[in-house]
Image 1 (cartoon, rainbow, N blue to C red):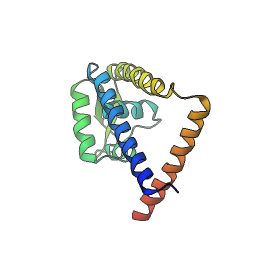
Image 2: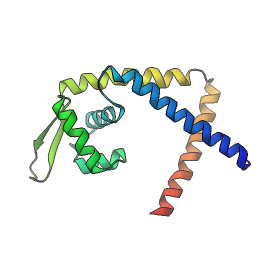
Image 3: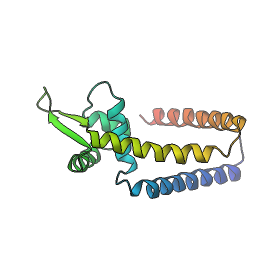
Image 4: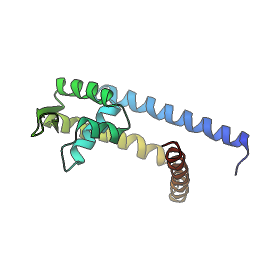
Length: 149
């Protein structure tokens, strides 16, 4: 295991990296008027075989149901989704519109440009090692999360 000083340095690099990534994504998607979280909802809706509930979206995106409700209202107002009463009166069916599909395609191009662009500085071997390191970190975080539940 690395010493504490090296761990702190790596931790700060990770935090700085994710903040910078977030900033670049927000700058590049701002003109499209679709924020990252909205992109995630549109992507989830397009991939899903079934129509999700707000609660299911919240669980998938790891955000509160209230935050999902606010985003869905804005996305419906902006014409990216529709919500209709489902067979269960307590549940709205959320569907992506043509405008939403277009926005998703445009934002996906931006995400791909950023993500593939930043990783293109690495060799194939470095990408493999980096991915393996992320897998190890992810496993540990899942274990830590399971300990709390």
